[in-house]
Length: 463
Ligand SMILES: *Cc1c(COP(=O)(O)O)cnc(C)c1O
Image (cartoon, rainbow, N blue to C red; front, side):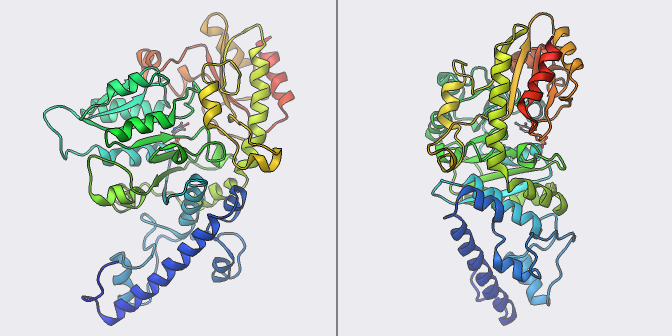
């Protein structure tokens, strides 16, 4: 904190109180970091002390309030100068939103020895935007355009943000990696004008993978951050910081908020990340830096009401991802053996092109506590192509009775879509070819139903 000399005795008293508050929160955070994944997911930073300060409420209260009132002008001055922790105004911070941020930060940092920080946003796309745009500054730009390196096999919204908003509208050169398993291709695309390296692991909808540790080493050797979208895995199955990633983004909308009540996103960053641009604060604590700059000035905050909905679903993330992954494995194996199915894309299928790399990275957190030894789990998203003309895939989709037709995933209800006519429709045929998305591809989110009922529905639809 700033030197106290210039401040009045009243402001100094609030700075002192703020330091006590920060120390208490740091102690709670340190205590929770010694706990297991499920314990963190259930309690987060909201312990007995916080409950007693909130009339004993065992559940985190929703602070449905636009702003915070202050005791006096000294309190206000200290708070607005960031000299003490305060939330001030719900565009910049909110106590309920803060509980969600701290839980996500702890879960994503689980097993990683360093410090992490999180910022939650009104959507996953906002998190992708907040995680990437601070690197695309004019600072240090020479005569050649700045560029970013990312696999084209990514979420349709990200493809459009990078290709259209950054590429076409702002002149950033987008260097799409065609085969994310080819390390030489990543290496060949990075140069002195690259600002960041980005990848989805696994990707939506193709379930493509990349070697996080190898790409992180490559990015770091150029002084660049690696940003990973691990929405499909969730922190229950994979935590990229352990493998060298610098920033992780999530569509919290998906498996993390499995009930489907809200759209939400999160940006999580480890402290002390590399970057060729930006002030020291950006490198020291990226999440906090974004909160004080891009986030404050763009205003993409999450409603406290929605934050609590997400927080509530997160409490059971690990056990859900375990059981849903096991169901998805059964469904994938059924599809792989079906005569009308051309190919199945699921990293859990042995012999699939993605299995080896996925099996290296995707483990159920604390899996040994349930199964006696670590277990691989591959999530509940899969894809399959139907043999014959693309109309056949449409016919299968149209015949589904239990599985809902919806452009969504990460749900407790099974859902299916054809990405070429839904989530990846905007990017056009050429963009889909680049991203390797066949018009016959059906993306399937396996929900919490009994897997035999999901299989029966798929069987009748394929028949
Ligand atoms: C859905 C999704 C996003 C975007 O998240 P929203 O919450 O829909 O804005 C980003 N990345 C991946 C992998 C996604 O599946």
